[in-house]
Length: 322
Image (cartoon, rainbow, N blue to C red; front, top):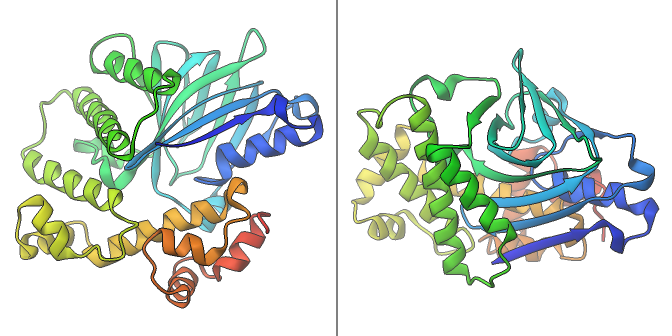
């Protein structure tokens, strides 16, 4: 399991806020952060990479965060943030609707639309666990997919309680897991999140349940094998016991192609690592190779086409430099 751990008390006081902010937000969906405690910021963060999804747990003083239209235009990882408050309150205002959640609730918000988040505490510290789920692997049922505002979900009973307990257990467990274990744990968390949202819709699943389930399995397989430069439609189809023709038809329903989806996911993973201060010493060509690009020139060309600038300029723009 790939794990990133941050403890602010291990850094000089002047560096704590910016370091925590960069690790907490810049690597996946940049935010503007405001806090009255920047001068003496005390925060922790633990991030687990579970293949298809990421799970994290953090603690920090009260703060406000803003996901602005400008930041969304700059880069949108197209993820859902599913938060499980552990101490204090998590508030989100998105699409003209505001929700406030405490322990026993969950909050779902999309990175693709502007929102304001607020973390409040009565004892000085807020903490929460959070799942970062690619929208592509979490097909929301019915009209939920069209909602452009945050949702508060019950976390004390039913699927909500199971999901909250599972995610909280993941981030507090110190057991060393291997890559295959991490992928399985990520798949379980994703299944629980999918079941919770289906339950909120008040249905056992739409008529196209099989189609959605197959699409989720295919995308999950792709996410687990993005680093393999040999990943191909033939390999994916064989792993899912379907024909290549059926695989291409599955992606046509999503108005994309298999190759385009793989390329987009690889670029997004590489983009996150380029913006990660913890990886500032990793060469760009090494990041490209890690995510399945055989040639650095091919990666640079694809990155420029997707984000409007070469990866070197993007890394400089985010303030992450070697």
